[in-house]
Image (cartoon, helix red, strand yellow):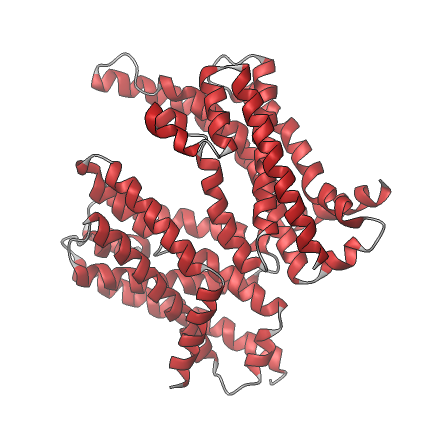
Length: 226
Length: 238
């Protein structure tokens, strides 16, 4: 119940700071862009845009959210409340994943680029949690927004770029060990969706555990409990 | 003046510490090299593969224009992020009541850095250009793209209450820059829907090389800067 209230609070917070409005505007722009393209390109471009923007939105925005909470001392208050680190982490990543899925579905439905709704939703939802967990780790490890933006660049190169390349040209079941490629596979509903889900669940565990370790340590430091 | 120089030095030190300065200096060189050697090579491969005379050549000017935009835009982005950090930690209010003042703060964080970015941009475009732009043309284009980047920082900072809204606006301010590619991609009946964006007129100027388009771009950017500067002062007065 507490987790549910935390998620609701985070969604309200994201709504207030214009995340939903921003992604409505961008979804509209993407829909128009995809619609004016030749039909043969629409599926590929649609998948790339959905993968690189709504799915990966947590990667960038988590930095602003965490840095803002640190500067406003919100984190200090949370640390001394009954909220546990796992609840804090889950509320952050799940609330962003819901927005990602909502924006992804909006673009996919209006451009008719969704091949399989189940794999599409699973891909965006888990992918978004992974990206948000990475964003959260990087946000806690950096002290300024410029530092954070720079720290995101390697993730973009090593996780997002291969995912885009996979949508455009590649095709091999072995590539699915890569998290970005596994998300792409689910968004385009490729032939190895089951394998992609297994790979993603493994990556999900790794990144969520890593993020949890960071949050745990931060909670201990902020609350003064050792 | 002394306060402005000192504040500017702090800003540069901060960028160096964050690693952003290296990125700002290296990225244009890297992308310039890719454009200079990669694009003509790609054109050669594409034309021989599809057996056509020209495929990308008509868009070479657009690549030069993007290169002219890159350095000032990176600098303006870094400035926006620093200003958002400083606003959230309440540092700006403290700085503005020192001899630096609001105007001095803006000069040290945005005007001076963009002025330097303007000079770097001229050098980058002169070295890596893949078209035959004259030096006057390079100076004019870089002036417009630098001023345009200035508006981008003002949008991000003036309309946001904190760094979360700031980052959302930074993403949205990309739309302000999108006008650059409009004259190259859309038909003449549709393109004028973007005429409120100064970037659209920069694209038109680059494509048609008419002085009147330079004038329209310049004046429209100045109007945007005036309106946004009022908003900037209003935010700092709260």
